[in-house]
Length: 303
Image (tube, rainbow, N blue to C red; front, side):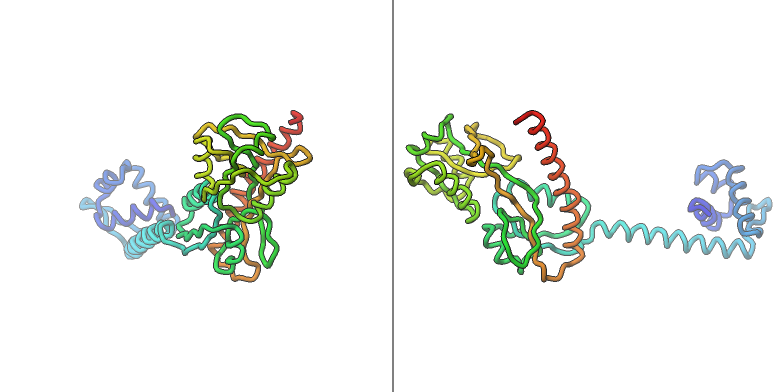
C-alpha cells in the first residue's frame, strides 16, 4: 500500500462518506472507489459496506483503518525526528589555526562544513609551533611548515612569497630601504631569513616591527618600507601594492606549506572523523586538482 492509501482509509474512518472524502483529498469518486477496491484485492477481504447512508467498515476494515491511523502517526513522528537531527548539535571540535590561515581559509571551510553538519567549533589562534606543542589539547590544527613528532600531517595548501612595496623596486633597492617585520612562526622566519642571506651579505636596514602582517601592509602603503611575506591566493591587494615574487637560487618562487595536523595517539570522535573526511574529499582534493591544473598550464606555456 502507498502512503496515500493509508491516508484515504484514515479519512474515511473519521468521516465515512465517499463524496466528502473524495472532495477533501481531491479525488474523483470513481478514482477513490477504485483505490478502495485495490486495497480489498491486496488483502483479499471486504473492508467497506456501502449503503444509501454512506459507507460502513467491516470488522477487517475497522482493524485496517486503526492501523492506518497508527501508521500515519508513526510516519509523522519519524519525519519530525529525522528533521530534528539536522538542527541538533552533534558535538564540538576544538581546532587550532595560524593567524593568516584562520583569516583567509578557515571561515569558508567551517561555513561549508556547517551547512551539512550542526557542530560547534572552538577555534584557537596561535603561532604554528605553539599549536604543534599543544596538539594533545586539540582535535586538530592548521599550521605552517612541516613538524616532526607523534602526529599525522596532511598537506592542505601552499602560499607563495612576495616582496610588497609601495612602488616598483629592484632587489638591490632593499639594502637601503627599511624592512617591516611582523610576528610569524619560526619556520616562516627561517625561509625568509635564508632567502635574505642568499642575496645579501648584510643585515636588513632600519627594521620596523609591526606586530601583525596586515598592519605591515598598511605601513608599506604609507611608504615606510617593504615587507617580505607569504600570500594566499585569496589575498586581496586593497592598497594596490607592488608584488615582487621572491625567487630561490634556482629561479623558483618560495613557497610555504600549510598542514592539517592531529595527534596519532589521541582518541578520535566520530565528529572528528567526519570532519577529516570532509577535509580530504572536499577541501584538499579541490586544492590538489587546482594545483595540478596550474602546474600543467605553466609547463605547457613555459611559465
